[in-house]
Image 1 (spheres, each protein chain N blue to C red):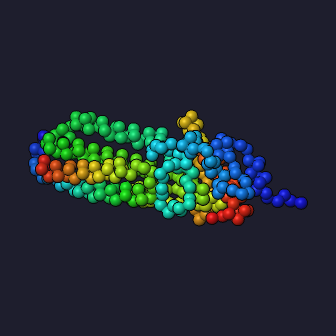
Image 2: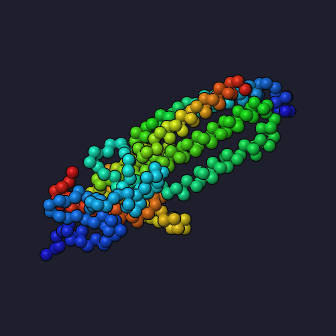
Length: 74
Length: 237
C-alpha cells in the first residue's frame, strides 16, 4: 500500500474516474453491439437469431451492472 | 469449319460427379428444370451429402431456412459457406488465456496494492473486455458467409462491428474459378480458398478457408454450365 499510501487519494481518484469513463464507453459499445447484431440478422438469417439477440442483451445488462456496481464499490 | 458451341455437347462432356449422381440433369423438352443441380423428384434434399441443419455449419448444401438481404423470391440457395471452424482456434486460445489471466495478475504487486473494491471492479472490467473480444470474433466468423444461389454468388463480410460489405456477381459473370489448398493443416482438414474471377465491378470474390473447396468449385462449374444453357435456350430470368 506504499504507492497509494504516499500519493494518497488523488491517484485512486484518477483511477476511479478512468474506470467510470471506460465503463460508460463500454455500455455505449454494448448498445452498439445490440444494434449491430440486429443489422447482421437483417442481412442474414440462418436460424440462430434469438440466441444471438439474447447474448447481445445479456452483454449489455452485464456491462450496465458492472457500471452500477462500480458506482457503489469505488 | 470451326466448331460451333453446343450446350448439349458441353453438358454431355462434363464428367459425372457425386452431385450429378444425386441430382442428374433433366433435359426433357416438355419439362425443363430451371437448374442443372435442381433436386429431382423423389429425392429428399435432407438426404443430400453436405446438407445439415446446424446453424453453425461451415458447409451446408441446400440449406433450410436461410434468408439474406436482397434475395429474389425465386432465388434458390445452393450453398452456404463459412470459414472452417478450425480457423477460430487462434482467438479461442487467446480467450482461454484471457480467462485464466486474472488469478495470475492478482499476484502482481501493483494490482495487489489496490484496495479490494478496485481489484473486484478491475477484474470485472477485464472479463468485460474478454466478452467483447469473444463477441466480436464470433460474430465476425458467424456472419462472414459466402452464398451460392442458382443465380449468383454473394459474399457477406462484416469487417468489424461497424462495417458491412456485401459483394455479389451473377453466375454468367464468372470467368475463372481457382481452388487453393496449401499447408499441412488445410490439406489434412480439407479446406482452402476458392478464388473467383468475375467480369463484375468487383473483379475478384474470394471464398476464404471454406471446407470442401473442390466441391464448391464443382457446384459453381455446373451452375455456370446451366447458365450457359439457359442463355442459349432463352430461359434467362
